[in-house]
Image (cartoon, rainbow, N blue to C red; front, side, top):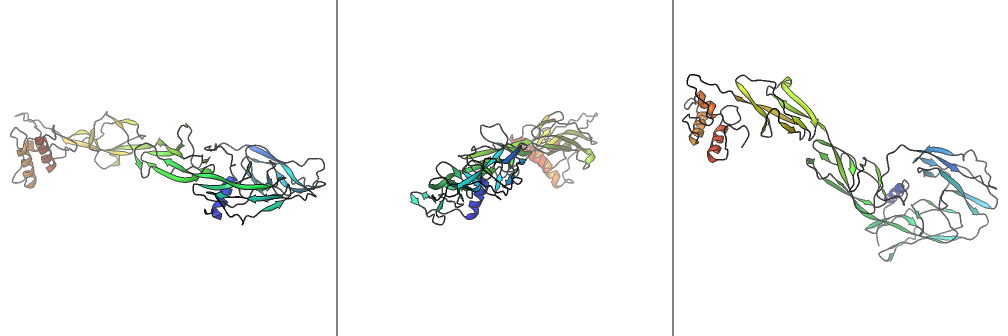
Length: 429
């Protein structure tokens, strides 16, 4: 025998059904519009109907979608018993019941039973799962005269692929705890089955997602859902602003109320770029010597000129992610970034012998080869024993423009091996 839904789950199912009717359009999301004002009227102005509670039964004006409490008020009519109120002749209400309004005016009319009616009709429940009849003895049967009201059972069933969300008499559908107005014939209630479906949230086919890219939840078709909020996914440089579905141009809001369709559905994230800052650092460490430019993620800015000069050095460009950018270059902002100024020592021309800087020729023999790399490493290890001349140091500074280091020796070795094709270089190789 299949298990029953627990009472808490059944109450929850009944509660959500009270917000949206079982016949609501699957996949529909409510528009977030300003509520209309509607009027609820209790119509007892019929010949032969009397009441001492006319004032209590006066029309009620409320915002559409607001709940009202059915007012106290008894009606009298010769030969009849007043049972309560109805809108459609199928579902009834009595004083104290809560009714949630829709977007139209509503008229409640009285429900009557014939005073001396002795013909009773049977209300029973029948549930079958996988060909096996289920035990519903705890629900029991009732015998009522036409017009009497009875609450529809709150009990729910689970058959694995689907759950019951209410009952049907073969024509009408009811949620648990609704008041059924007894017809003038026997009635058998059977479950309304709704399938389990996948509600998928997808970050989209985009880059820079931080963390998970999808969330899959199990939901019951035709029941209300509240769409997920903006914390569902993270993307560097962007903010999540809503959801969209395939084939739709509409953007759905966070927490927007929708109806789960009778199929799996995917809601894809809608992203908007945020404003970010690109900082150009001169290297002095003071905030006054930083250039700041703002723009939206993935927008383009023009690389600026430096505002600081260093004595004895020339500005070589702005370094970001091992790439050197020159003033005037176009740069696409990936997110908030920082670029650092790169300076190289100025070349001083000796006017007496017109000695020229030959990058890589650390030992000044007119060639660039492994002996220059060895000269640099020996000088680094013991500068007093194996010093480089001033020109040799200028020639040796082939990487980074930050003075002679073992990195310059390594770069010359790469040049000798053909990995580096041109000296000097200011990016890692």
